[in-house]
Length: 537
Image 1 (cartoon, rainbow, N blue to C red):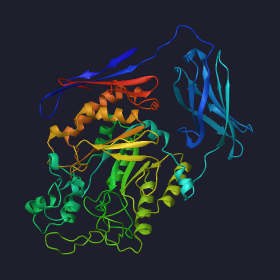
Image 2: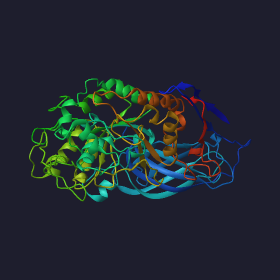
Image 3: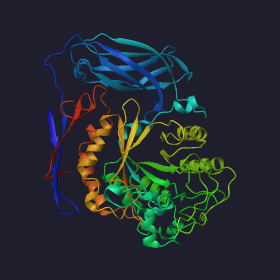
Image 4: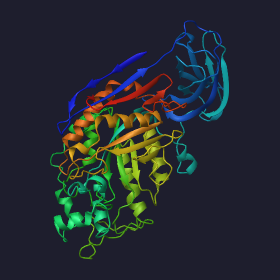
């Protein structure tokens, strides 16, 4: 048994000390002799449309079960390969099964190169090894990477890429003009500060955080939401500091709010689409591109994502659905219609704005288009172009399930989903708000041990964890947020082998007798034990 722990004692912003320990165990129970009674069976084998990074090698996946009563050991030299009936394809990256206990399963990836026709035909998976019978399993598969078409069947066949499945942990950033008032109240009545405009417009006594009342008392009846744009200065924004922080946190990717529901875009757009951007308006900078460039230069292992809201609450030409009808806002204090700063008249909001904006984000090098709300869309057309163009560049990209179609993976806000489909949990360091909330005290932010616990919970259930930071209007990520990310990050990076590039264990995500034990696969598990007096790092 290998047992490692990485404890530390750190002062929190309030001066108190926490002590939390996470123990990671890698357990291998090895019999003394090699048995000749090993028998492996194939539960599932399939071709995918993904490839190993930096190559043209197609990924095939298989689930292998040990149906014998003996352990598979390294000495058995078990290999899993794929061939086809035409001999035009060959395995160049066999899968190795080094240990597998009786009754357990292994999820493996096999790399295949196809030199002949790229089409569907019969494939044969072979399991071979020392002192064990070979197993052959025939199945139908498509050899070669297919292009995508703007149809349900084609787009729905796209899956989250290996970098996302293996990356596990990302940083979410909510930043925009709502970071100027930065108000969501505190405690049990806190709400999303990034929804400031919407809450304010609902009128008196209408929301728990009382944004209408706060705005009237703080700014008066004649200050409009769009007036805050002039104070969204980004004066202290240092993209290098941000990406270095994300790397210190142990994250594999980030997602920046490129355009929220208020319609203000943090990237450049043509003048015939919108002038409501950070380039035309204050701070006159392409904030998304600057962060992307910093990642490429200083932290090239970070994948780049963009949050994109399809609807805009008060765009005059948006005609949406249900509670998202669109149209100009009305000042809730004076009852007068408000202009929409940077408005460019459109005849078709979806075709003339949403589709080209998503294309622009894709062309900027976005690896993950993280949509929100859905509603009317042309996402299938966009996705086919996005996937095919990325393939031509040797890149694997992804979209979530909030673009108006099923997407590559499911998303859950402050919730946990099932393991049968890839999913991602989002949460904020703030106890509720994603945008910066000036009312939140330092000691209310998510503690390092909770960050790690939420990550491990998600990973053990086939999920990723996307953790949000909320910068100020000046572009400063508050010190307490940076501190908690780095403390958690030190532990995450020192135990990366048991978190990243792992698969969930289908038998169970946790121990029924001890829910603090979380499994990442059949060979590793994470044991969480808390002590109130210290903190790990």
